[in-house]
Length: 360
Image (cartoon, rainbow, N blue to C red):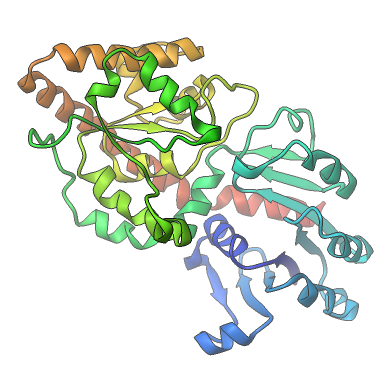
């Protein structure tokens, strides 16, 4: 039997479940809240991989585990997320038949200063949802831009909405609400969003805007804020989604929960992101509304032009024409959900990655 180790619960368990599917795992720990709160580790077993997965609550829980415990397994993979965890790294390097793996499931908090530490750890494999120029020529690097979707499915609780959506009819065009909705939260690092809106003539007047954080409660419990998207993404008409990175940045890219929600709810949306991400999604078969208003998008200016063309159209078209086109776009957008779940429910790539790492 093999062993795979994660240190920490909050980020690690959601990405683990997204990689392998909760339905494919045997939960070996006691299913009891009091036991969970008082236990230092949680145990899962994956039959196909013949691998036990252990989640240690704290770094100290992993460090206190005896070497003889680890030696009882044929091979071990340790997922080291905290690149500053020097004691964890030292212990891992001393284990026999052990591989070091980094799952970079979410690119938003990556800093260039991390590179030196990552190089020093000398990972056997980096599985990333973030395109980074520093990694492009690394043989031990696997890029999957949809990897964050696996994480969001569990981390923000959308796995519990899937059955609900199957029984809901997706709303068609509603003349009684704004034609275009968007979350526009602009602070120091995202002031480009405000600039972008101002640079597209007529967009600001057309837009029904909402800040996704309004008071201390929202800031204290950000996970629960993700559920307001049920109303804002599902019961809006057109949706203008701003990704995290400035679309002028093409040296790096990653996809966040903002796009995940757009695909999840299957409604027509325009996406303000780099041409790299737009074309990636298009090539994967997703329907992104930008391409209805600009056939070819190969630059930042093309991205902006697609939004300009949409704005010009919706300002000049009649209400009936907008409604007819919207419902036409809706029929195409619904398929996004199908493609998304085909990806989320296909665990073969994850199993191949771990199998190869265990066997090498």
